[in-house]
Image 1 (cartoon, rainbow, N blue to C red):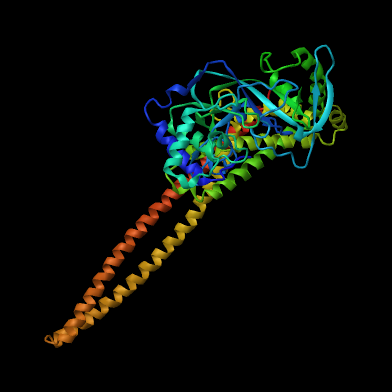
Image 2 (image 1 turned 45 degrees about the vertical axis):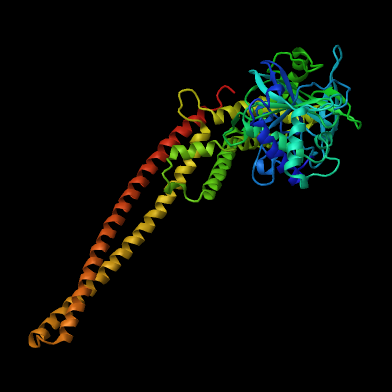
Length: 547
């Protein structure tokens, strides 16, 4: 994967590009547009038992600091940079080489290596079921743009001699920082370097830093002919990951790659389930809906039957409850003590629910259901027919997804979801525990204040007695300077003790007020726990009705 191997080149090119891009009119000859409805393709590696959905494919999960292997965007190594979503404007024709295989994503075969079950389909013939190693499969998502986009053309195909804008940037950078460059650093050599992204990433980061474009187009380094489209993220997910929202999903397919990089279209169970939501799209040789239905319906019927016989939903929900409670307790522990801030409970719960909790719950629910089916002898027959991945996908689509939706979304006429109710219960229990700890701490503080008050009062009484004795001595010897000084010192000590006594009393009043407030809050929290538990029981009782 390409990385920034020459930081000096990166910095020189980035600074020159940023200056030139900001010059009025410099970008005008290179502006291009993409119309609403134009197709874009996203090629990703295949993940078994983790069916990619289009929202995840539109999301950049790698933090900027770790985004070091993309050619045109990513970290500059010093905490700065931009991120982009890499797509293609070209559909891979079946049988043709896969030009961007090494550059669309980091290829990491499943560990341990797995065979993936899929079938090949030809019109008029029954699907052919087969298996191949996961490293030979790539998934492609088809999107249409939901609106027109404006961008910059940085393409440099082999049949084009020059790109004047990029040439100007390179010459300016070489003029300003000659020490960063070497003999042979031509535009094409820097642009087409297979392993060094110093030039290209500086250009991409600078144009997104400029803020004037929504995408830019480049030429593939692999074949120096096909095009990449790099989109600037337009929003962030609840978890803070950059995401593009100008794309509408149209379908997906999988490619089987031979050792020479040539492709054959094929379909996993995941693909078929995913595509059943869309109209027939131009994804190549897609099986008609009736072929899909005839193929998958018997398996769905069998899986529904063994789920009914083997899954205890009360036990499953208990496991989900425990999973949520453990997860939220850990997050609260990591937050230190969120109950001493001004953040309200509702905001705290919203933040906890908005994290990656939902994805984790889906996986936990899926794992729980599959583990319940493990003892069914029918499951082995299903696995022989459609593979572990096929069974997993049908179970998720048919059984897990509908119940997951009920877990994370409010039921009709309910203000919150079951997920929110369980999270609230955990938070409130932790808050009650915190109040109980506070009550013990405050009682200890009150005891310490009372001890200090008693000691101060006893010391004040002793000083008052001393003052009485000194005053008697002063009456007998009124001109004694030593006795007068002793009296002054004792009176000063008495005043300090009076002030200290007053401060202790104020401290006691404040601590007592804290005790009363904590006691009220503890009582309110206890009542809130009871109300929330009643709501959670109602949701739980009705949550899976009709699914």
